[in-house]
Every structure is written in C-alpha cells, then in structure tokens.
Image 1: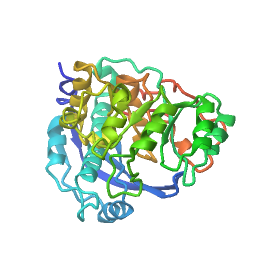
Image 2 (image 1 turned 120 degrees about the vertical axis):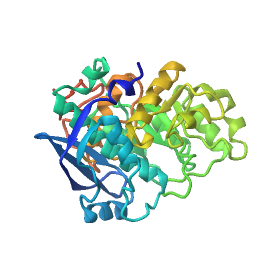
Image 3 (image 1 turned 120 degrees about the horizontal axis):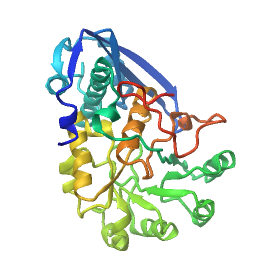
Image 4 (image 1 turned 30 degrees about the vertical axis):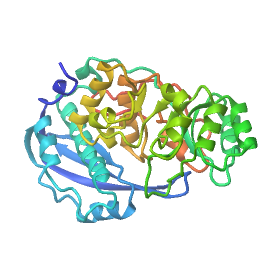
Length: 352
C-alpha cells in the first residue's frame, strides 16, 4: 500500500479556521514572517505553517482572514483536493507557483494534524514507522566578504555541530583552509539553481572546481550544470551532487540531467500531502536517498518537517536544525544532533 493510501481515507470534520501571524529577525539578515493555520473541528485543533517568503503575501493572507470555504465533513484526501482547487491568495503571489505550493502545504498539514487528533492517533502509528533520532546540519551563509568565524564561533559553543554552507566565489584560500580545518562541513550549496532572487550566485568552473577539490567528501548541492563549463568541471563528482531548489515533484527528479544519489524532499516545496508521499515512495523504490530542508519556519512547521525526516530519512544531513539556530546569536543550551524523537501523542506534531 502506498504511503498516501494509509492516510487519504481518514475522516475529517472542520467547523472553522483562524490565522496567526508570526515574525522574527533571523541570522540571514531579514525579517521572517509566516502564518499559522488553525483548523478547528470536533473539539480539536490542527495546525500547519505557511512559509511563503514574501512579507507582502503573508500580510495579504492575514488581512483577508478566514475567507475560504473549508467547513464540512470530509475524508482527508477529499479535503486536500478541495484545497488544491481553491485560490488561497488574495492577490497574485510574487513568486508564482512555488508560493502556491507552500500555502497548500500549510492547509494540508493542518488537516493531517486535525484528522489524526480527531481519531486520537499519531502520524507514525498510521504509517507503521518508528521515529528515529534525527541527524541535522546547521545551514549558514558566511556573508560577503566571507567570515568563517561564523562557523568557528558556533563550534566553540557546540563542538559536535555539522554544517551546510552556502558557497561563494569570494572564498579565498584562507577562508577555505579555515573551513576545512573544522572538519565539520557536510554539504556545500552552490546556489546555482536560484534565478532572480537575493541568493543568486554566478556559476564559474574555476571556483566550482576549487570548492569541490577542497571538500572532497561533502555533498555538492544545486550546481548550475547549464552554465558554460560547469558540467565538465564537476563530472568527476556526480555521485555527490544533490538537488534542492529544483525539486517540487517526482517529475522534477526524473528531469534531472542524471539519476541522483540523493535529493532534498522539502514537504512545503512538494506542496501537498499526496505529492509528498509519492515523492517518498518514489525515492525508496529507486534507491535515491532523501534529506529534509527547512524554510525558516517560525512555528509548528519546523517540527512537522523534523517529524517526517525522523520517519523517512533520519540519518542523512537534514537541513533541519532547531529553529533557535537561525537566530543572529543562538542561545546556550540548544540540542545537539541527533535530536531525540519527540512525536506528540496524537496528531502531526513534534513536541518542544
């Protein structure tokens, strides 16, 4: 039986819903806003988190309020299909279809949480899986000019941390040497698949190759293989190339230039419960490893992504560090990797 088939027929009653805005200044130098979706029914509440990045889209959603026709008695699958047919944006989203996927997931995940709470069972029990300790990495940009001290300062306080770092053409020999000396880098993100964003990074064969040579044992995420010379430059390293930004569906995995060893399966980026479950099943059937990624969640969304990772890919370099690591100055006493399993007694939530 497919993963989705284990969930699609769950009964679901929705009486009303509400939206809650969250906001936080995070370490990457911007103010993150998100919206918590609260679905109510049968004396229970289900929650999900909208991680659309544009603040204007979050403001518009919250200002419009609970205007969608969600009340009724459904199966979980029918409700998710109903949500997919709605226009959840009061104004056209600035980032188009990707933002639509993020928002759909917030309602799907809230519905999954509510359906499970209404029957009094946790997600892992329905799936027949046992949550495992969750390996995570801390994702960092070192700024421009690069400051490897951002890594070393964290390691002084948390010596067992592992990192996923955003690479940059301005990394000189000293920066690379300092990062190599930590022995704490698990993956390098070339940011080569972002176009028209604030994190766009130009592709050039020389610095791609220099980074790959400097870190011969790490994963190499999202190189721009379409840029001149890049495919040839990274040809010896295809087995450690992973993909994140392009992956929204099984079709995106199949469209990659070669069969991947590992891809990032972000629940919000897949945009729906059926698509996400199909993605997990596809990777398992084709021997493709998966890892999870965060979206600067401020609320329940991070825990839900951690929960799924603990069930489907707990041992990979999941970019799902506890949200407190996103603060400009993370507090003392944060948990180390791996995270102990913390599923709620019922529903789709990760405690703490």
